[in-house]
Length: 509
Ligand code: HAM
Image 1 (spheres, protein in one colour):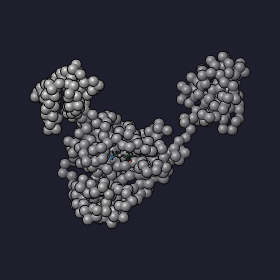
Image 2 (cartoon, rainbow, N blue to C red):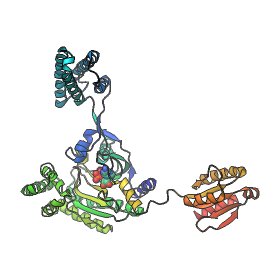
Image 3 (tube, rainbow, N blue to C red):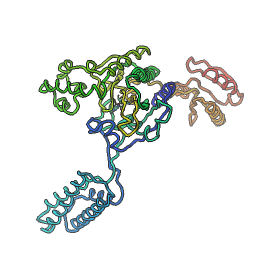
Image 4 (cartoon, rainbow, N blue to C red):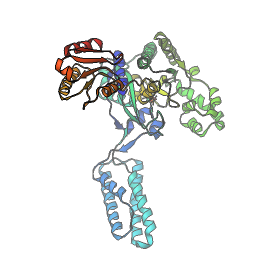
């Protein structure tokens, strides 16, 4: 199933001129913080991040971390003090020479750590037996302070891949390639979420991005029609892919969330309106009035739905260019025969979007029913240090896509076989092996049982595997060179030579 889905994606995306890119599984945390946004749920709560630290400092810190407090006695306290002091002096030196880069927070932790050691000294000098509790407490604080210091750059398992594709566009000078650059990717993404049906901490996405450098002095208004056609074609491509797979209950929702000019004004208006009804909102939405009022529109809370329905809608506050582009996207989708519904509350949870946003849902998925999300992100490449560049793309949740196909009974027989070779007797095994080798070399899918089976049992298994033909090889067949071939669909049976069998297979499959 996974193979079929991925193979189909390659075929369909290939027909639209996309090539594959394989971004790395982890990247500097900073990349995601900048691209996706430090305030978003994805970056602030859901990333798996770690310090890429190594060397003696990291080793010492690990040893401190692993020191447990089983018995506080003379030997233990001296050994721990020794290790803590070594770490402190080595770290102090590394900070002075710039070997490890420190920010304000790191320096504070270092300060706590140094004060902690001074205190530890003092407590130990008062005698161990009478100070056991204080020794333990100080030691725990020292561990915490050590853990807080950054010893290496922070890296994160990728929560999504658009940021990486933009980074790759910049690093590989893709702006000098024929534009636009059309890329697709597939692979695992990681988000710290509460797992449930259709929501996992490691999940798979199939995504695509179209990137195009903006030539200097280009009048943005002039390109509205072109951008809209690109948006519509990208959406058309996902829909064609879902159509090819036979995905059921597919619903496409679209929206425009404006640009740098009109969105901030709308957000202020929305914030002001939300302030008026603040007391009637739940705690999450109340918080979002400050941090990101647009996300209030995402709320699923029953009690908030009536209030949200009365809020100002962005479609009424788009600037001329954004309104023009949105109208053109809808016209273009119409020309391509792509059915859609408008959803003014579709804002998406990543900061890089502007103008066109869209989401696609499918049947059989319960509450996690979004199988695809995407949108336009002009300016993201520039934000990451590249030239002014336009971008539009999407990502499909592959796990959810497969769940939906399976729920609809489109999982299909595991693999199917062209030929099941049923053999009996030692002579027959040699012929069966040779036959299987020839058939496989010719590209047919062949099942060759490792041990002989009674013919009835073999035919049962062939049926269960969904084989088209059973090739029956027993003493008779070997002696006469006339093989028995059974067509499993109708149970008919004929005899033929090896050459005739190969010829028949070639014609019928
Ligand atoms: P996203 O909406 O965060 O967008 O994710 C896209 C899709 O990935 C979702 O619609 C869903 O099907 C799937 N997905 C997300 N989280 C999970 C999870 N925890 N478990 C299973 N499936 C999940 C993005 O990631 C953007 N990078 C899409 C994009 C590309 N926009 C422009 N270009």
